[in-house]
Length: 295
Length: 279
Image (cartoon, rainbow over all chains, first blue to last red; front, side, top):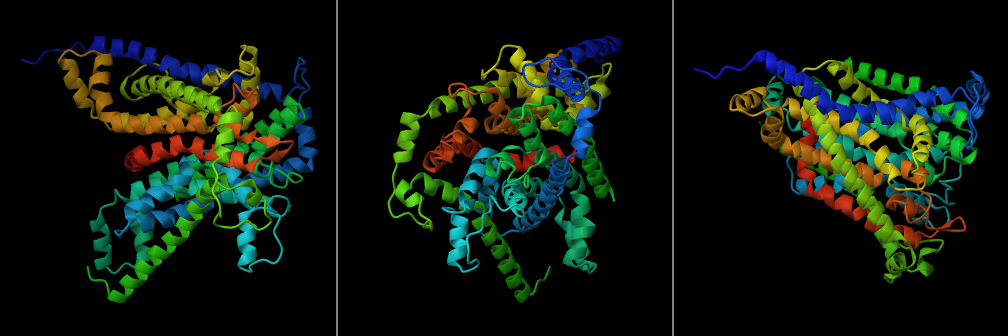
């Protein structure tokens, strides 16, 4: 005979054990994160500055902000930086994953090397690129001049019309490997027989990609894009260290803008209003990207 | 399958072409970082820098160890990253096990809260956290980071671990419990060993996240003795001018631990992240 387990007592202990096990995580989420978040929302309706108690001022911070052209510029930059950056990373990552999914000599070597930028601390990547971009001593201008591609050094870090793209390149350089490796992991789970069947049926490479490859890795693609959107949106050190958001906020994104308002201009209230006001934007970007994948 | 010789040539040409370009784009910044760390100042600050250095010097490394708090910064980073990783792994393993294996009140709500919390932008959180952690007496104290870092490490770990734990067949645990294991024992003896490769991946990510973190470390610490390595490096300035020899040599050393970790864990990372994504 089987040993009989008392179902009821298991359900009961599961309840207690479950609650005990989740408590530490719940403290982190609600205690350390949730309370400051609610406080952030509250402070955005106050005139809080460093070292002085705050006073409730209603929507004043938001009104001032929405009238400020700089704010709208930063919002626009943030949208370009996030969606453009993730888009390029996705496309490059996909191409490289498809290439690396083939059998060829030296595959292991390429796989290891192409992963490297992602392991690098973000601030190290930012500092290295800033040094390469340097308008006087930088190697990028030096190479372009030697190859006669340009005649004058380009001020990568101080020409307002290009600085946003200057910093995006760094973010893309560091972010492609994440897509490459997530997608490669997905591609390796696809059964090769499906392609053979499609080939016999006369489907070309492009057709095969959209009919077999894309649907098979749809889930991984969705999660990878979501994570990348969050990280790119939160990316601070890259912009902060490469251009500092300047000149004239031309490369400023929401994370560097809020830092600037809070710690340089010392106005916590205004900074938090700016930060809180973009939460709906982030949710919208995430929602739209989830929806685009579903179609 | 028959593929004509010509299309095979095109395919290989395209493959190696794409790989060649990516290789240069990927590796050049690494080369330039190492090269700059070994270049004498006189050569470094030339209007048209040379691709290959004519002389090599270790002066930047020597002054890095002799004249700066760099070793202290490295120690601080190791201290913060190690403690945070271990603590967060324990918290997340317990949490994820509960979320995926046990039935208890509010389970669904708590599971969703963890995912949603990961979506909250850092820009919203850093000021109130700075105020809160300072109020707790951790002003300019690296230990304040031990309170803050779990807020982004725990949600990520839980999220990843959930899918690894779901992949472990429940019947194995039932068998163990019939044999007299309680919940905790069956988790430790059945689920954790099977999910071990996944846990290793999560630990690697958690450690790297902490080691690489910049914004919170920048805000929370001001004195060199308390700073982590990322903030320490970016402060190598002489009246607003970055000292590139120092910065690049420090960058090389600060990158080594995480780069080595990634190369060693590479095969796990690829399969591990895929597993995490599928479920």
